[in-house]
Length: 188
Image (tube, rainbow, N blue to C red):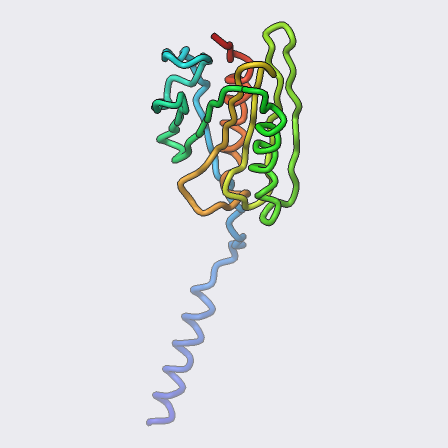
């Protein structure tokens, strides 16, 4: 009797296991891609007593200090663009060297540094925009000068551990804003 009971239980288990399987094929889920949608920026001119002006996105927060340095915050992206101003007093080569040194201090973490030179002789603006590719603290840096009286530098920072692949979409988005700043900058 015990032997028959074992056979019945074995038969029930085998029957259930074969009938519970369906003929439907199972496929692994496809890889998903993060969809980052950034709104098209509307720009506004900054108003200050500083010797320069330019346009910034209206979804940013700006804060000046007494030296005419400005911090442009991107709250949704947890990023800030720090811009410093210095007057040129027969020290242009020193200022250019400092701006370049700031960028090349990141070579330890950088895989590459791409430089885009900028020149607008009509409005006396000369400079460069540098993209630091890799896990560096600052992914974008730029400088602009009129070569005689004004010099500004800017550096982009994120409130996160630098992971270039993760922040790349935000870097590319803010890069367009920096290019707009460079285009709209005018010296007073």
